[in-house]
Length: 342
Image (cartoon, rainbow, N blue to C red; front, side, top):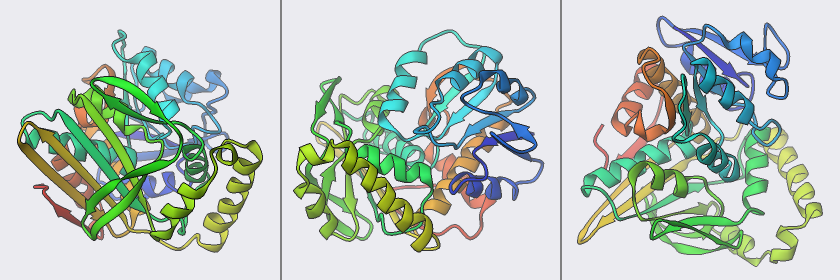
């Protein structure tokens, strides 16, 4: 099988490529604006180079190159596109534009650790209570670690983008940064902050839960107080956004490039009197994200193109399958699970 990874030389994409190359019977090709396979998201005339791929993975930065034209091409041409963007605005736009349309190919939204594993964890918790009425998700991570440009742009955009939750089946917006509830993680209960995530709308679409929200527990804990102390006018300032990007690009791409971060995920699902809490904690969040992209691409490729339409990842790849394939292709993967059977 042939899997093409756009952005396969980047921080996260390269980890997906490395994991895919450990899987037997897979031809992995990196694509981008330069190199042997040229695919430029700003130039749709280059998309024909993707013909012959069993799965196309887009691991490039949606901040620099919106994936809309690529998604339209793949849906029309009969390709399977696994879109790795976690940008709330981008993911919601793709979902709203393409969901329910007739298609020859497939667009799968959610690849990595969040989005991706987070979606599958939410769906797992929902099934455990027989179809959740409400789902709360949490992620614990530290910005003081290595990261690629796309992740840094995503972080900068998230603190300036209105948060969105689903309440009684409707999308409800709130200011970019607000206090969140305490959430349980493998490492213990953590205070959270409410920032912009794509998962609430995605999880509502895939599980039908009427109330969905997601929160961040930044590490170290003092970062929560620092985020909440930021004036809204400053957060929305272009100057602040530019300085934020410059600072964290230098910090995460230069000084801390080799520093790994533990990433924790939790999904708490409720239906009437029933509640289920599922938790995962990955020793190296970015490696886990890359392996998750690879595992999801492999599952989709093995389907042989027998799907068409626009999907949230958990509708095609359940959590137990995702974790099982992740372990198969990366024996060094280390994580702790609670409330999860795989």
